[in-house]
Image (cartoon, rainbow, N blue to C red):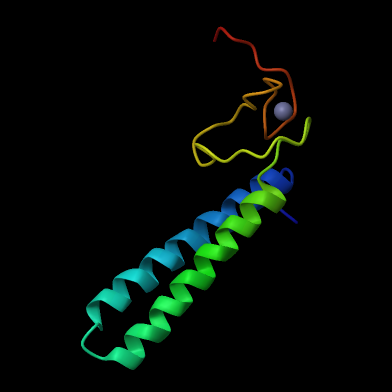
Length: 97
Ligand SMILES: [Zn+2]
């Protein structure tokens, strides 16, 4: 976990990469749809990557403070919707800037 503030940041980065891979596999499956074997393999890869994204989401994309799984807006939010603490630093976030 070197270079990451916590599991949440690590999981989010990992998730982003898998999500990109999954989209690339899906596009490739569409491009190669004339070749059924290649298309099937690529679709399989896409599904495996997507399943990994869900797995990482449940395992890592939790609030480090209260343990809530952040499903919606995981790539955008920086504050836990339940305990209102920063998901990166764990500090209380002030409402006003
Ligand atoms: Zn929380």
